[in-house]
Amino acid sequence: MRYATLFDSNYAPQGLALIASMKRHCRPFKLSVLALTDDCYKLLFSLGLAASDDESCSISIHTLKDVMSDMSDTRPLAQMAVSMPWKHFCWAMNAVFCEYTLGVYRDDVFSLDADTFFYASPWALLAVTTCFSVAAPPHRFPPHLEHTVKERGKYNVGGVYFAYDRM
Image (cartoon, rainbow, N blue to C red; front, side, top):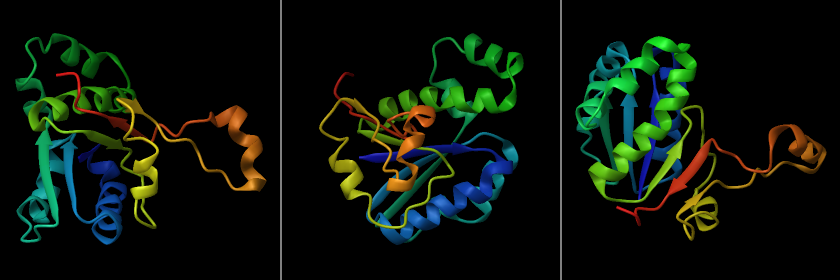
């Protein structure tokens, strides 16, 4: 299985915190990162994230150009980039990057919001999602916040699992 996330240079601190938490709690792991801006791409490479000597954590860094070169028709993506607010474009790119990652690596993908932070192993989370082709884990609100399910929803789409079983 491969994790996937995306962020720009403005959201890089959150993305780097995600990576640090994965190094602490998710070993071994494979992570694909979509650097949404050139500045973000340069930052990630300057930190040596893709060239790690640590075999238990593999990080691959991709650009919008990588994703677009894999598409047969890039016009819809280019139109999205200029026609919607940047944050909405970033949210929309999550689905595009997941499809790209499934196709390139031919492996299951667990998409994570860049502001995710692991405080423990994700294996319990993965156990409730990886038995489906597509799954989002339920929120685990503490008792005093259970009433927020009505406004926040039952499922936490900050992490969505996609099985490589259809390509």
